[in-house]
Image (spheres, rainbow, N blue to C red):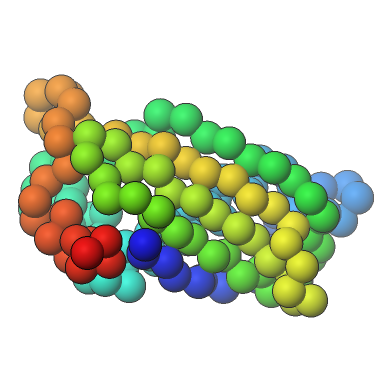
Length: 136
């Protein structure tokens, strides 16, 4: 299993009238976690797009809200890849508040697309190689 924890503060612009992190912004926190998970092992979305010609659109998204996050609160974004990717990858996220309470959990499923042909492809080996040691 591959896992990483990133941190982000709730911005004022992300809150709703109640002072809570607006539900639509949780997806951005999932993306922060996902990007930092990959970056932690030397992978980047930009490199995958520019060098490998692969894009990763979201296929499905699931989110469960347990407690609110509030303005200026430091959120821990725990991100996990629980199985080795093949033609798609599912990333699991758990968000924790400053009291280490679980506030949200969700998952995002993405696939691999050739940016030129827009056809679905298997995960490229250049992207899989740094991930393999976490699943041996």
